[in-house]
Length: 281
Image (tube, rainbow, N blue to C red):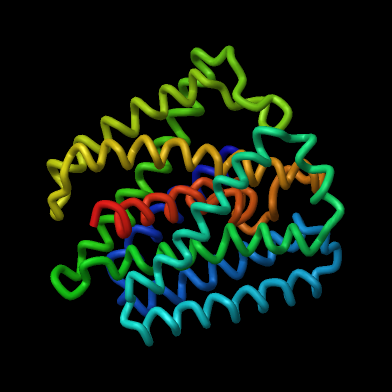
């Protein structure tokens, strides 16, 4: 398991970074679309669809929604008004998801038996993630075609380091559990360690990344990203616990499924894009 996990990481991480810098915006959008459709296929299992054909139809439905969103972005020339709608929807959803997590398992009583609600929750997770990823890739494209790339690289590296440092500090110092009923392994000590790590990364990034960002803004982003990435992780864990599964699928050897790898990003990317594109831009 460890060997396959390491091999997969060595292949996936460079591949993601290379595709981020080498693919044109439309090519990157298609790749992101495929990833999100695979995530939707996995979400079908969380929603209670036991038959694979049902999950395929779920993925196709999400794909149509995402293609329509992408088309509207290009038609309206990535207008902030069009993008802003999906970002506000993401903020509302993750505030609601926070309540679901805080009051779990009582909060699950009214949604755990409803496939429709769980599909709506999946749409609220995957659709804004897709939209915000595409919007960030296109950010500042007419002035500097690489600016959006660096924004996405920043958020990806930040979330990867947050996850790793939370795990490391949690193992070394963890005593106080954040949400034992959802994810017993997550501790407040790990979360504080991830906050410290994300702040350092953001400070360094503000000085050495080609696009110059205001250090205070990036440090604020790092705190917001750390909190939202933890929420994304806990939310998916909550749905998996109710579905009675450990991994969303086995598409990625040693890592589980697509959702298991992007759960933190599904919250962190839209929240980051919300503050960067709508608040501080």
